[in-house]
Length: 217
Ligand SMILES: C[S@@+](CC[C@H](N)C(=O)[O-])C[C@H]1O[C@@H](n2cnc3c(N)ncnc32)[C@H](O)[C@@H]1O
Image 1: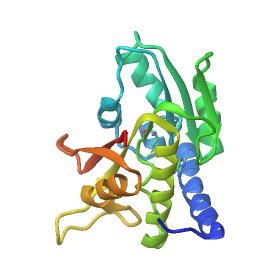
Image 2: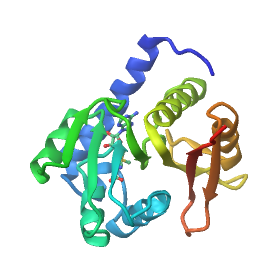
Image 3: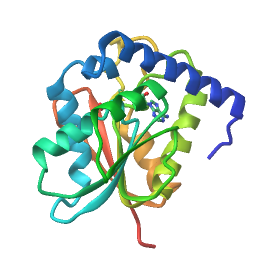
Image 4: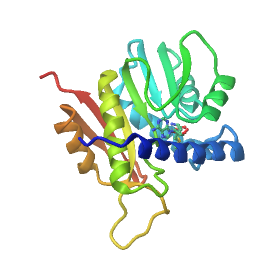
């Protein structure tokens, strides 16, 4: 893994924070406000990421890049019977304020930042690696490595993340969107994070999900 210059990293986070804060200002707490197109695809991402979790028992969950807290709507709708000790983390103060306005409860908390202040059974991160704006790709991939290493350290049973698939050759994607191949990050998690990795990429979107669980030895 490579070490990052903190000034470059701070600047990348600042730009991403502004991007999402503007989305929220424009569209409010809704899928468009976190740069998704609609509720069904936002929910489909959650369903794939949560494949990792054992809903037969209570668990703690860190939601990195929680936005306005849409995952809690999903959990309330589809898993109301399972107690979840939830912490949402987001780099945008406006997102955290919005989430706090929408949700309250003894087992629901939000934190502004790019790392979780606590460990949990599981962590998920939906959509946090997609919008890289005009960061150099090397810097962006270093930021992803750093974030994955943090998720590994703070997730006792495992974590899951999603990425946008690289387009077929000749096809173009939106400017400033980070696209990649599953193998690139499967290998990183396997080798550098000593983890077992499953890839899900058959859900009809140009995205894939990695489910990452610590190897016992
Ligand atoms: C595409 S939105 C998805 C929000 C939420 N996960 C959902 O699916 O509804 C990404 C969110 O992650 C936040 N974010 C982006 N990069 C982040 C990072 N490195 N650390 C923490 N939050 C981040 C953004 O502010 C934004 O709210």
